[in-house]
Length: 119
Image 1 (tube, rainbow, N blue to C red):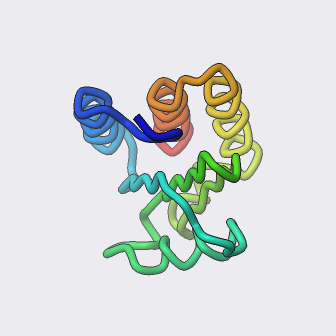
Image 2: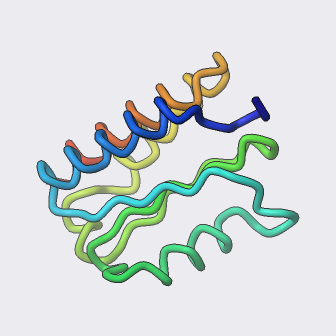
């Protein structure tokens, strides 16, 4: 398995976590895991976020495991409930898990935290 890849079971668990988080919160949540190939992580994540159906109501979590880059981009409506500090705490939680080699667990915990604060 390549560094930063998810198994089918991990993908299914992550999908279920996202669906549950979206039902609890007021935001659409998208996750990108993969290489950003020399691009600036924040610009890349912002560009992806802007392509979402409802970017103002969306949260995008972007992870490039090879670069060890993590970005969370939130839309305007989401920022009313989810502060930059709360998003940063979710990133810290994710990166702790990533450092232990637990990509799926880190994403799951981070998404739950983001959804909890985005209510």
